[in-house]
Image 1 (cartoon, helix red, strand yellow):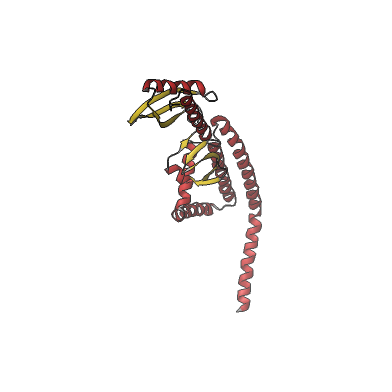
Image 2 (image 1 turned 135 degrees about the horizontal axis):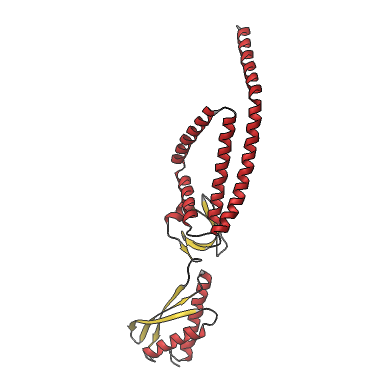
Length: 270
């Protein structure tokens, strides 16, 4: 009985050995083809990324597209190598298995899948790009990297924040870099001892003439209410300083300028 089993095992091993020797040339050729496709995939990723960035000027789009092309070329190489080894049935089974596994993983990792799809939409819709200053999900900062799963940004306080793409895709985004100009708005109350017309003149003169470090345009002055002997004033003007820090500096300088102008004009009395 034992001898029968030994003979059976030897027979199987001999058949496998013969099959391996028969398949060895195809196996070597398949490995060479796979290596060639991997080299081609790397070259495609490198040059397609540079070309797309030169054409679109969008780092995120060129990076994601180059990565996608890399995986496509590698997949074609794998299928070609399997065909060389006469494993057509394995190719069919592999494709079916990939579909089933992809479906199962889609249910198991819904958030990961949602982030991946959101990353693709962000890359093609391009609401922002690398080095843009944006505000989203309560964070304001400069975008450092856009990946398929998450977007990394550096806040103005120096924090490195990684936000899932799904959260960015589903919520409002303020892109300061793509903004042409911003409106500065200031509200305050002043005594009505010089008259509304004179106060309006002082405010407009101060805004247009005394804010010298920044480009300001189209000052507007509105009196919104009368509170006893005081006037409630709403002042607005436009500036080209769109970055949050620069915008706050313009607003700060406007308040300092108005305070100084009121003091010189004795709006607050002696």
